[in-house]
Length: 341
Image 1 (cartoon, rainbow, N blue to C red):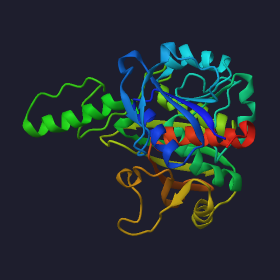
Image 2 (cartoon, rainbow, N blue to C red; image 1 turned 90 degrees about the vertical axis):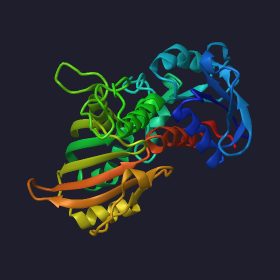
Image 3 (cartoon, rainbow, N blue to C red; image 1 turned 180 degrees about the vertical axis):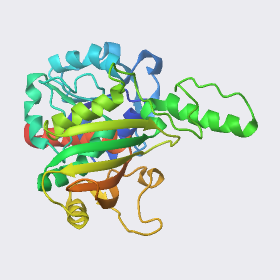
């Protein structure tokens, strides 16, 4: 026996990826609904590569009663309007927006890191999926924190344009083309030209000079991993279509060598260690696309602090940063609570 599953925002980048992941992982489904805004109502979308086509239904009129799980990836406004409605109907919501992440009654889950926290889902019938850059960060940090207790994290992200949705990907493509043919190149989605450039600005600015994206990484890492960890982040948009990268510097309470860290990461769930100290012995965003792993490379000791390490982390932001993590949450929910299939 399987589940009745709804994908809200099914026509977007992450929604399509959710359908792909559900199909690839053979998630036990009895019935599947693809739901989106009125603009997409009546369109057809393929369920992964199964050849099965789903007719898109209007979220404004969708009745969630009798459905088991709803994977939301349509933005905070849609989640605010419809997630409580789904939850009230008895359908467990797994929400990819930022709306509920810091709600104390909503668990914020990365299954490899804090699976036990999912037990609190019944308070709101909502489970939050973390920010894409946070998800890969905590997967890489978890085994190291368990071994030597992380005191401080300094992270610089290099985030792909797919994190800004289809508009971001289109803008990078169009600007790149325009530069080659000598046409005008005014930014629309981003604040400055993204083609052949980097932009140290993701989301809105806060009073302290940080951006909301940077704030998310700080507070979400604390909620998922450990509230005692000090975190500072600089988030940068780069001209890459898919795949977020992070340069991470860590300070630990206890001594830990690069070799010990490599051994821990090699065995950690969700982590793929590719760390050869030679030309090309590391992973770049192009190589991570379509993979569910969080790749770690360039593990080395930092001699400027006691018990310091630096490392490089890369992941497909549409997968582990969003769609895959949401489906993994659904799988965890099924194993621990819903128990079907």
